[in-house]
Length: 308
Ligand SMILES: NC(=O)c1ccc[n+]([C@@H]2O[C@H](COP(=O)([O-])OP(=O)(O)OC[C@H]3O[C@@H](n4cnc5c(N)ncnc54)[C@H](O)[C@@H]3O)[C@@H](O)[C@H]2O)c1
Image 1 (cartoon, rainbow, N blue to C red):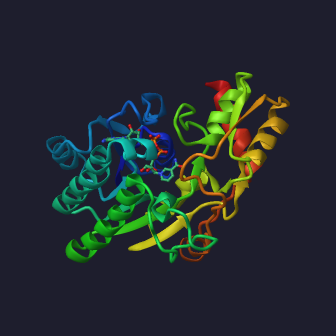
Image 2: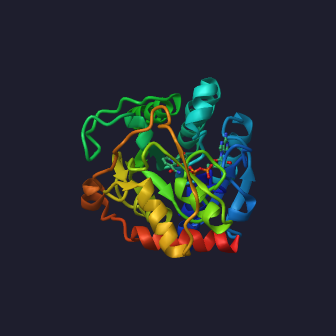
């Protein structure tokens, strides 16, 4: 299959590229290697063709789609910082909404069959029920969450109006090798780097806030399954349980044999105390389930940062 992965030089996108190539597909990537994103040339699989371009550059996209003629587009390029989205909502909407629309228009123009989309748990805001599932009301609390939710509606509309299939994955907190340890999210990679370089860590609130951490290789496998299934449907992709920041600290300390000094800080605005997904639908419809335990995933992340 010919597949175009947007954001394929980034953390999640590059793992998806690797899985597609391992499964024998022909893969091209569009990635701008945006300064504020986690994209790196070093992440790019040498068997993929990289087009260094911005998804908001319409002329560039037309040329790329004409050359690649993808059957499936995995759309993972995004402005994904909640802080940037609050500071510059227009930038956020330009990339996450107008960029998506350019992708969709080009898909229709060249006759692509399907788009696989990286949605986000951020589109739920503070969940009204737990576990979060596909039926939970989305009430985003940041411009980023709003554009991720709007994108889902565009995908549904595009299917109804133009027949382009889609699968939406609403990811929990994805972690693993290649995650940018300098970003705002990604507590596991931030901590892993600090444990390895023997620096102290900051724990906000009381550290008992729990989120759903899912290992990137499991996440990438969902995108492989979506090549053959899950058409015109939405799936929550997480571990199905909440893990606290204190537990992350404990796991890293157990693996590294080091207990860095902890600086305490107040709750960050908008932080949620408890959030986790039910992934029953992904299991039932796609046959997807997380296969990597938290300890194994953290160990793999540590090993990656040790080597890089
Ligand atoms: N990491 C998570 O926990 C998480 C959770 C939910 C959803 N997501 C979504 O998954 C996707 C991938 O996120 P990630 O964590 O791998 O981030 P990442 O920053 O590592 O990857 C995103 C990639 O997109 C590229 N990009 C950004 N803006 C672009 C533009 N205008 N044109 C072309 N390329 C551009 C970046 O250069 C980067 O390589 C995003 O859509 C994000 O919103 C991530």
